[in-house]
Image (tube, rainbow, N blue to C red; front, top):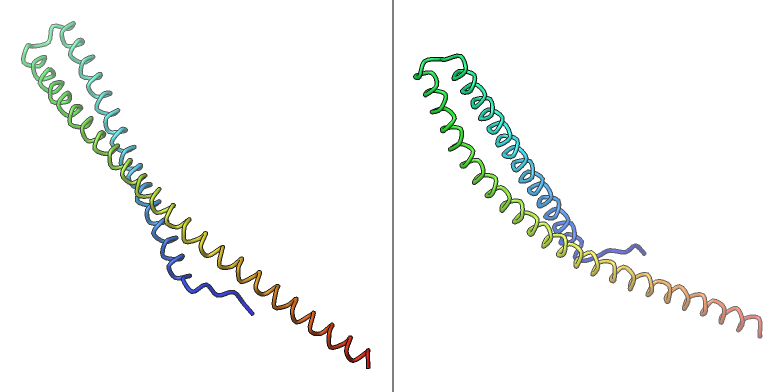
Length: 147
């Protein structure tokens, strides 16, 4: 006789939910990393503009050119502030996805443990049935041999 768990579809569903939560966390982490890379690129561009501004000042470039560079640096600064906010939001999203994953993992573990207990109970009952059959066979043999 083969073990059949009545709630196996629920166990499978919980496993699928956990897998989906893992994918969503992975996606959120990927977005966070992309935001951090973008911020790094903005810092690099800002530093390059500062260097270009200093170079323009050294070579006595027109004031309009220096002012254009300064305006672009200010724009980059505002982009950096916005990107830092985006990164903070991405961190919150990652934390939420981690919490959801933890809940799904716990839920799956509860159902898996219930399944394992049911399987162990089935195995124990099977062993008892088998032992009873063997005992009955031994009793019948003894009775036949005793006659």
